[in-house]
Length: 112
Image 1 (cartoon, rainbow, N blue to C red):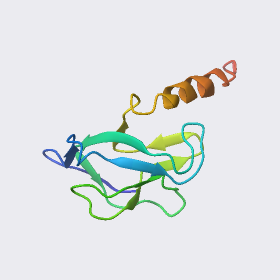
Image 2 (cartoon, one colour):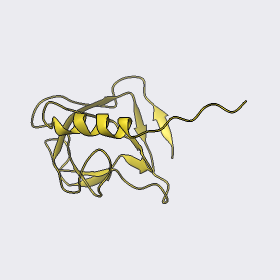
Image 3 (cartoon, rainbow, N blue to C red):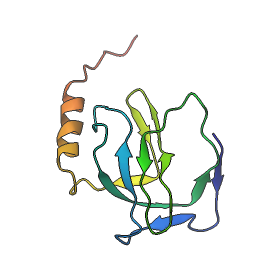
């Protein structure tokens, strides 16, 4: 994956018509397939490509700046990476799912 750092904003989306709306493409500990998740986006870099073995986290639905839906983000096991900052007040159950997933983690003692 190639990330290019820009001198200024590469993208910003705060207005309601421009805000990213994501629809997950598979179930995970955070979301369920087909749920609609709102967010906002701003970043100083761009992603040029995604390795074939890295799954997209969700489909971004069309908005004011993006006329067609596209796959975005990256998902590998329990890790999600994305430029979209999720809006948890729009889907409070996401916060509950984070707490549930964190509560289920069993910590291992460091090896000595």
